[in-house]
Image (cartoon, rainbow, N blue to C red):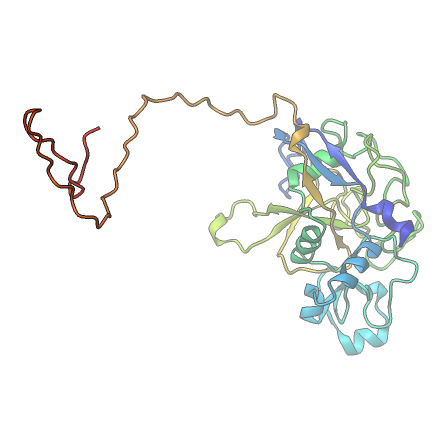
Length: 340
């Protein structure tokens, strides 16, 4: 697995203020409005986590079972499911998806499929919990939504895509054709693609933020106009996937600020993730949290408690002096305090 080690590389994102979201009032996914946010320094994976990396994790943590394995099924796009599987081991869902029995990370299309030729593709059929456990195994964590967008934008400010404002062909894996029946595969792929199949998507030389697979973040997702305390637990996914479109005619419009929410046990053939890690030692001075100086109060005298005498010796006898006045008194150990 030496040739796959490069996919574990990370890059530091120095903390700063930047514009997050998009100025599109028609958007209903929560990416509008454009707003200025501040983020502290962090490390981010250059690539999404690949099948090779996840295989290594499962080889070492062989007792762990993914959510799809525990459930016994996962969502697969119907165009990739053979007819015999559809009839015997699948249930239709919405928007061209079917729930396929035994579909999981190493069988992305269900029984009979495998990872041959896909080791450098992003791992899919992973839930929020699967992603969190893997990142913890590496000593990392999932990125927040703000961190994810900061890393995806690179040095660009409030642009639609990681590389800039204008659309460029063959910069990402999206759907070309009439979803879900026809895929013209103008980009060369009908499902997932290698994480480095396309040029780096921003000035930081980072790959595959938009298109290919949605990516889990640690941010809670809330629907608009609904009280937060009655909403089910859901987390934000970013980036769009190979079934989404450039113009939004079907599924989601792919752009840097795009987002959606899913419940933590949701698994599908177009959802993956990447890891992050704190790098606060890189923070500029204006980003570091300000610590209020504490004013010292008046000094209080220290109080010492004198322990009780524990000796069992007999008290000293009074010594009489014939020539030097009154007798001298010895120290009585039964007294609670001594005069200092």
